[in-house]
Image 1 (cartoon, rainbow, N blue to C red):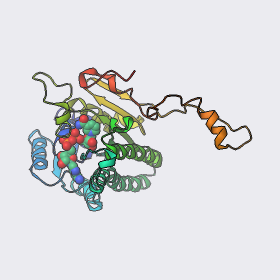
Image 2 (cartoon, protein in one colour):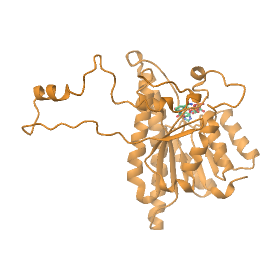
Image 3 (cartoon, rainbow, N blue to C red):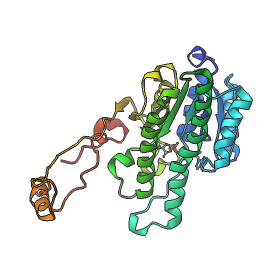
Image 4 (cartoon, rainbow, N blue to C red):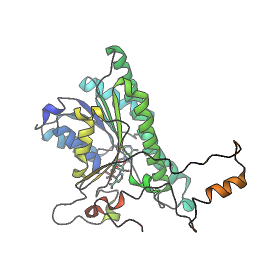
Length: 308
Ligand SMILES: NC(=O)c1ccc[n+]([C@@H]2O[C@H](COP(=O)([O-])OP(=O)(O)OC[C@H]3O[C@@H](n4cnc5c(N)ncnc54)[C@H](O)[C@@H]3O)[C@@H](O)[C@H]2O)c1
């Protein structure tokens, strides 16, 4: 397959690969020369993606299962090692939506979304990093290891109709940062992407594709996943990207906005009233710890003017 040298047979797991972003990312990794263990809930769509990879000359096996199950994470790593002799890349992508305002959300809607996204990222990461840590100890130094996690701008924005999803995606960013720090010396590079793409998940919101080239095609997201998973990803870890259309943005970390010191060494509530009221003057207040800067980055992909 074209581009084979860049991955040189490296082994990648992709979760949620039966359709949408995961399917396109899997095909792009196969085209770059990766051998794949593909996961999704059991069904014909996962098998069809495996067939697409194979008919394009690539290598892939299906390992279906609920990605949040402990046994699925274990089985994915085991399948990679037993089928292809190792593991180099983990792409955590599987996800679901159960959108509802916080005051109407059911227990089930909360649990399902947090489970599939956050626990689903944790379980696979747990087994992949354990495997890499063991290899690193054997080798006496860092090994080739990449994780690409899938967050969302919903976390940056505090998406009001998606408290479960925004919380899970925020958790995935924190998991990314903690894993990046905890596994750096073993060679593990782990980053998170916040994509936008017209898929089954977003079709209702984004509407039908235009007749010409689609700026919201998942194919605009896959090259960043290949880059982060590939050799060039060696110098990137603990970062968060926003990616869609012709645009890739590297997010900066949260910053300290204002600092106050108590005059007598400790605060009283009255003194805090005086100090903090110099900062928080808007009435009603607008949510402060959100990032709206990414909204207008590419108007062709759903961008809209930021709030004045
Ligand atoms: N499409 C977007 O604009 C967008 C924006 C931000 C983030 N994302 C994220 O990108 C990822 C992929 O989304 P998509 O748009 O391709 O959606 P999609 O619905 O097309 O694909 C998601 C896939 O995950 C699979 N899946 C669901 N639950 C699973 C489970 N428990 N175990 C294994 N597989 C499971 C589904 O079967 C499906 O194939 C998700 O994590 C989503 O939150 C998408």
